[in-house]
Picture 1 (cartoon, rainbow over the protein chains, first blue to last red):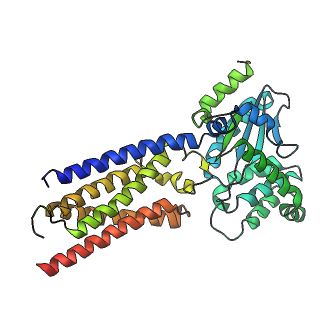
Picture 2 (picture 1 turned 135 degrees about the horizontal axis):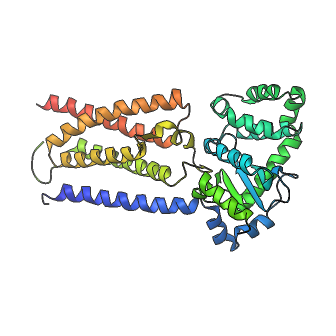
Picture 3 (picture 1 turned 90 degrees about the vertical axis):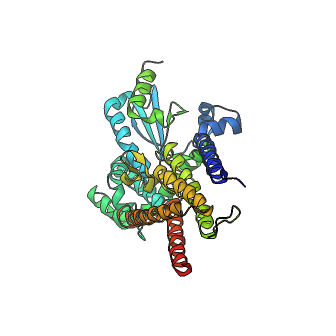
Length: 230
Length: 146
């Protein structure tokens, strides 16, 4: 045993720690990139996967022009805080490009979020009365007030339905009804097939965007390019 | 504590092992924070609400990284102490007490402000409180022995 043993042990742990950190970092990058997964699994690019995937709820919730050259398809979970923080970006894009692009919203509630499924169904229930986007916006605006530990968030959603002047009785029965449920399930099925692993996931003309590409400046650049047919 | 070269103090050794658990946890959380997973909610994790909160960074530095630095320092000091460096153990004791105070604040934030718990942050809290118990035990035993 020599005097350097403590320093040796400390150095070794530092090296192992750094190597483990770098390895985890690389690994997690690959993990959150569904396209990388799909490519390795199915040997197909994401555009093809999007075409062969189940269609999701029909018709989907869309904004903008049906035949726009740029289509953004977002998979999101109303309770996911990251989706909440991403929402201003989507709103800016919708405001700036309006009818020049098409935006599709897909339900992708995550199991780990307590009220995510109820929230998804609440948006669908509002949609059955023609106010999907209004409820969509409301759920994000109020995300902090309902996305916490509580036995039931449906009371909250009922208040939002009232605020949006919906027929509350119909809203409540639709919330637990088959129509809303099967739409959410259909979107979820599409997402699962595509290999969604994180929300929000955003596709531009069928290509999954990276987290960096979802930053507003980069995203606008990509949309501009798409509009110019690049 | 005799100063022969093969004598390894047991409590500091235990502290070093516990600190390694904390170090691993903090490395994991730092990676989670940096890899952009903090920007998306992933299927397998449930820490987004905590890691996305305003409290996840301190002066621009991810808290998890401060955790890495703290646990690595504690591990280093515990290793030195295990080989008989008493000064290292004294320094470690002060540090662990401060860490425990900070951890209590973080637990308060998770429980009452963010209203969401992150299991990896809870593991870190467990590690810090374990270290605190080891430090208290060591103080008690040293008093008894002297």
